[in-house]
Length: 188
Image 1 (cartoon, rainbow, N blue to C red):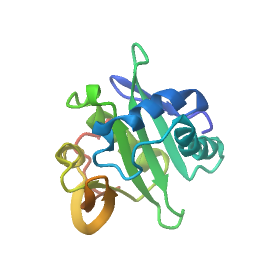
Image 2: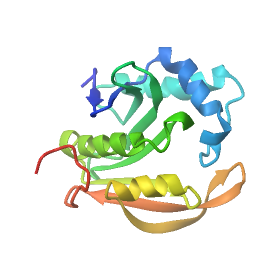
Image 3: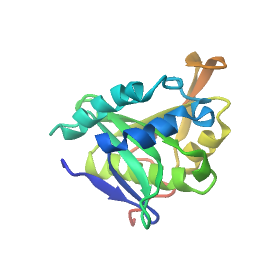
C-alpha cells in the first residue's frame, strides 16, 4: 500500500509529500484553523516542514503507523485540507482520526465526506476494530461532523487540550466495526 490513495464523490485523498509543505503551512498558519488545535501557529515554514517530514517517513513505511492524506477536490485538485489516521498496536486494532480543512471549505460537507471514507478505510482495509476522535467541547462544527458519521460520544476529558485560549475539555468519540455506519460509502 505504498501508493495509497482514496477517493470520495468529490475528493481525492493522497498521501502527503514534501511538495505539500507550502499548502499545509498556509493551513496551519490560519487563526481560524488554529482555534481548536493544540500545535499552535507555526513560526515559519521550517517548523511546518519539521511537522510533515515524520508523516512522509511514515507514509513510506511498509507497515504504516499512520496515514496522513492531503484532501483535494477531484476535478481541479484544489487543496481542501488534511486528514489522518493514527494506528495503535496490531493487538488493539484501534485507530485515531483527525482532520483540518481550509475555512473556505467549511460547511460544504467535505469533512463529513472524507471522514466517512476514512472510517470505511480503517475498518475495511486496515481491519481495525475501533476508531476514535476527540474535539474541543466548544468546537461545534466538529461535534456535528463526528456525530453525523455515526461516532458516539463516550466521555469528556477535563482540561486536556492546551489551546491558545487556555485549557479546554475534550469530547471523546468512537465508532466500532460492529456499529452501523450511518454514511458508509460501502453497500450493505
